[in-house]
Image 1 (cartoon, rainbow, N blue to C red):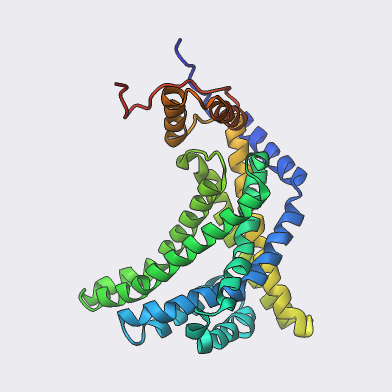
Image 2 (image 1 turned 90 degrees about the vertical axis):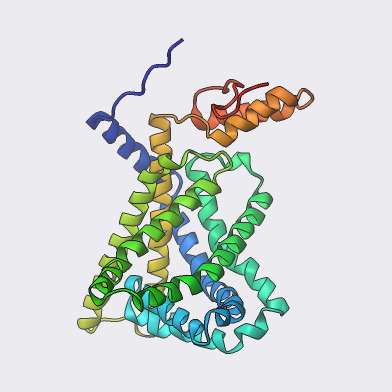
Length: 338
């Protein structure tokens, strides 16, 4: 029997998806979830910087004596593109300066390992929001999900520690061996590369956070929406903070912490609204199971005769996420049965 092609997108589908995204976001308490994510992001910032700078204190000198200072300058210049000057000068920069003094010794202390758990709280709140948006909360135990967020945080930390020296030293070395006219290309390509890196990170979060993940290309709409919402919110917030400061009406000593909380709040809001859009698209046009999921089902059906419960669980997961019923146990295209 030939499967029918999915209907082409129309204004009716776009309106239905938009309405479903907003209504589901409201039902999932997007404002309170965003506030929770922003709160944990603020609390996780010092432990995150401690873990990153503490590990970089050992790795960065391998690329040159001034690599760590160059990384810190790059981090500060990048944060200035998103946060207001007061947030950078009064919160982020002093925190980095204080941590840098003792970061190398803290790596071998108990406090560093405690900071890993505290720093992963922000990742845990983002994972919880993405899983809830796709109605997959029952598929992963809460304790297991918390340790899964810790694992994601450690992997992210290792990735940053490995790539940060290369990202800082690489362009500087390249600029020494290219004509002066080509150096402008590196300068103007900084912001597009920064946005693409942000989108790649959001896409990876959407993919790995779900117990039953969606195909990567189905996550692009939510990634684009999350990036646009976050960048737009930060620009508007920067303009508002600059305007409110020029009028003379300020929050006094609380102005900078409130601004930092607002930036973190909009970060959580953008992640959650993007996940809600992906869930709405999945509901309108259910995607087939990923290749890895089909491979697991085929292996269970072919070799797992004594694992009926595992097979039933896999079929139940697929039915809940794809809304298409249990997938047939056919071998993937790349695998031919013997």
